[in-house]
Image 1: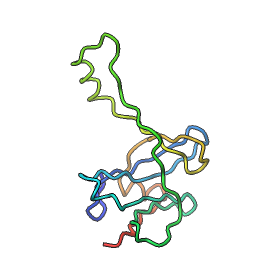
Image 2: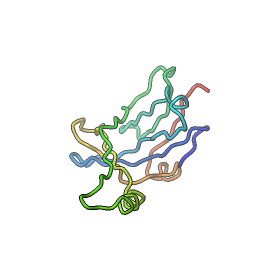
Image 3: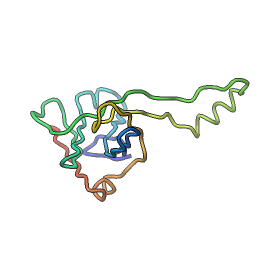
Length: 131
């Protein structure tokens, strides 16, 4: 979990299965939608920049990463409810995003990063929110 000026969330590293592009995005994890409803994230592949901004920001380069679908575990035939609950504790939902490099590809989460790890792979993190 990363905190950027009182906004909680995760920096995730995505990889497209179609074009093999890799890049970060930020996923908000606010307690309520009211906290993050006006906030957006843009990833710029050229300038290697991850930008958090709000609707009042005039111009931001890059593209927003769009969530396509979330796959969750389902119970298996003959599986007890207790076994299903135990499996759910281990199996996290899998998220798939529209690739911002090839537009038709599907990117999935490879790992989570800290802000320092993001910097070490050559990306900068900018917060352009009007606070």
